[in-house]
Length: 106
Image 1 (cartoon, rainbow, N blue to C red):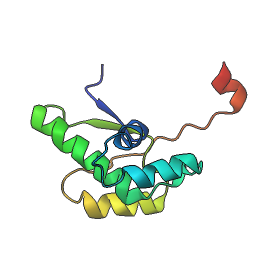
Image 2: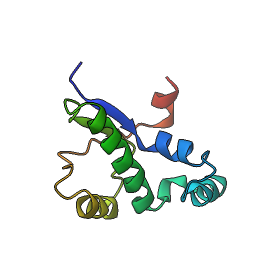
Image 3: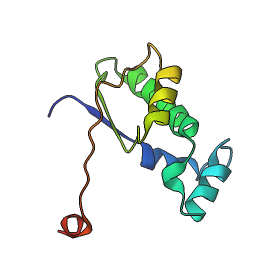
């Protein structure tokens, strides 16, 4: 409706661990098994997002507004994003939704 392309950091992490030749798959799988996926190294998430952004833009330069779901969780993520994606993509804003369990169940 608003012209944004949805990219899910969590989905990319889940998918990446399925690829046998992935340079990150084993590490991501370990974090999942240890219940620490929320602290996966920002560099990995940024690398996966960068690849998806490149593919999205290659398919259509019109898809230049992105809604990245589940990433930029802390200041370190933002610093890594700015370093890696400098002049490639700007983070215009971060939207944080914080709901209690009851609201989520509803």
